[in-house]
Length: 269
Image (tube, rainbow, N blue to C red; front, side, top):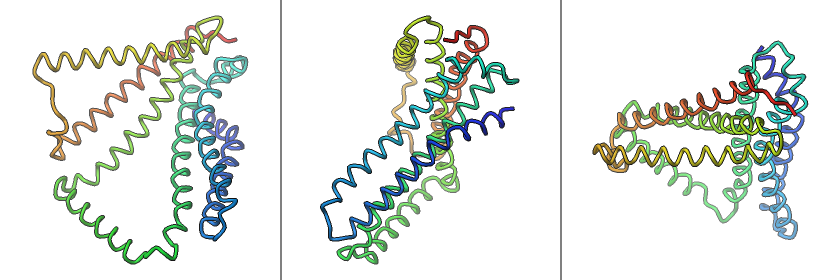
């Protein structure tokens, strides 16, 4: 059932995201063409439109995450969604997985559009690609050899770990917003306002926990200067795995809050 829900989410949202992505890439290509041409008049306007389009696409991904969850599960559409033969947990994960994928795709396409925008400058007449690419390649080789000497075969695990942590961070961000919206839904009025207060409350609680943790580390003498101690592959992996474990705990806490409210205290408008 989860796969069907995810498929439904993509079918409902691709009609919005795909045209937006297409417009962003077309604007990037148009700007790259005008960069290569000796015409500057429309370039400023096109560049402004491109920047606004990139900002709009990023806002769209964020707004979709909030709007789809709030309207489909906490609004009037919730009466229909909760009649489906699916558990609340499946509905939550369907929204979260879809939002995460769209956010990741948005970041990738923004990077691609920036690369397309920079391509004419790299290929311009005043640019010497042979020298630049040669220097760049030597820099890459030197950096890779230094990292390989420091981390050995474990070097190839670091990008994978960073990628997993980044994706887990996006999942946690979505789940955190869902938990705040769910807490806000317990109020009969001004639900989004209470959701924002819940978000602020989580932030204050996080700061308090960080302060207590730092105080305990200082009291017990376990405080470490990571800038000085991160000099081995083992320590790097320990820190990355620790970050991943912390994010996983946060995901679990946010999910439990959201699932409990939707299962036991659902309050539809």
